[in-house]
Image 1 (cartoon, rainbow, N blue to C red):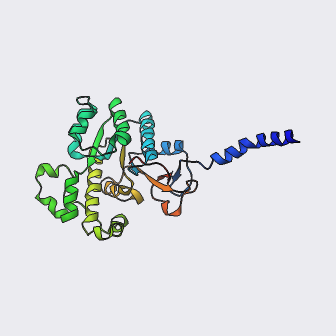
Image 2 (image 1 turned 90 degrees about the vertical axis):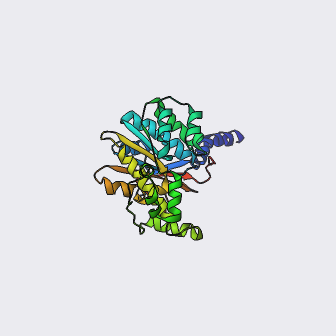
Length: 286
C-alpha cells in the first residue's frame, strides 16, 4: 500500500511542479486588443514597418533585454537604423566617434551626458550597433533647452542662436494642449506642474520625431528607444511623426507592469500596437 502511494506521489510530482512553474511568468506580450501574442508574430509585424517606437520603463531589465533581442533579430531581417531618447542631439558627434572606433567607452562617457544606467541598460544596444556598423541617432533635445521651456514656454527658444536651434525641432513647434497625454501631466504632477510643463514634454517629442525623420532612409527600418510615455496611446512622438509623414508605416511598443501578467488589464489595452507586460515584482536596474 505504501509503495503504491509513493508511486502515485511520484507520478503527480511533474504535474504539480508544472502547475507551479506556470505561475512564474516574468513577462508576456499582447497586441493592442489585449490578446496574447508570440514574439515571432510581433517580430514579423515590426519587420514590415518603416519606424518602430519602443516605449520602455527606464529601469525595467526585461524591457532592456527585449530591446537588445529585437535589435539583433530585426537586423537579421532588415537594414536597420537605431535612435534613442537617451542621447541628446549635441552628443551626436561623440556618439559617432565611438561608433567609428575613434574613442572607447570611457571616452564616450567623458564626452557625452550618459544616463546613470547606461552601462547596464543601453550600452549593449550601442555596442551591437558599433559591431554591425549601424547608424545610431541621438534624437532628444538637450535637457537645458527643455528646462527653459518648462519655466518660460516655447517663447524662450526664440532667444537662442541658429546653432542652438539646429539641435531641436524647427520652430515654432506645433502643440495641442488638449492631447490626453499632455493634459494628464498637469494632474499627474499636481502643484509641481504648470501650463509650460507639458510643453517641455512636447518639445522633446517634436525633436525626437524631427531627428527620426531626418535620419530615416527608405528601405531601412528605424528602431527608436524612448520612455513609454513619449509614445503611449499613439501620442507624443508618433503624433509629430504622423503630422510630418503620414504615409509611413509606424508601429509602437509599450511597457506596463502588473501583479498578474497572464491577462492584460483593460486600462492597458490600445496603449500601443504591442504591449510588453512585466511582473511588477521584477527587480529594477536602479
